[in-house]
Length: 173
Image (cartoon, rainbow, N blue to C red):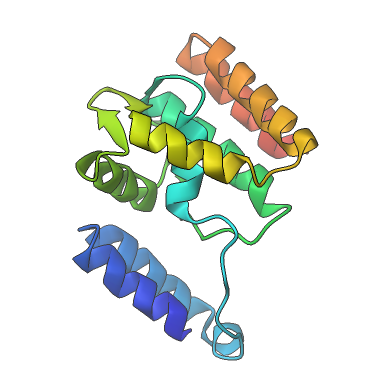
């Protein structure tokens, strides 16, 4: 619980995301009884690590970025302890998968020189070095799976194709 409260403060102070802070506090309130019993967790993959891994393949549009990050996060969270990215779905919107926390961290990585972009996002050399260091911790099977996710996301040229792919990924599991 204390760890999540610390993350909530950090989201506001360091990343400037009051919405992320609100969502973390809402989670603390809703899951208080279980969270109060939990010990502090060491994340294998932080939000920044997920962003760096997602952007390590190619320049991504904002929609592709959120889809790729969600899929990478979902895959890694089944194998490792990952920081909660706070994704939610808005199927009637153009950006149908969204995370204010991911967006705030992406903007922070841009300000820190790890990534660049406005409409399309990519890693700088500094970001590529960090991404490769994090990816080196993955097994070959995990790297191949993330490569497949990347190929699928990048092959979808239309928004409707991406939505269909994500729906089948979520509901076809």
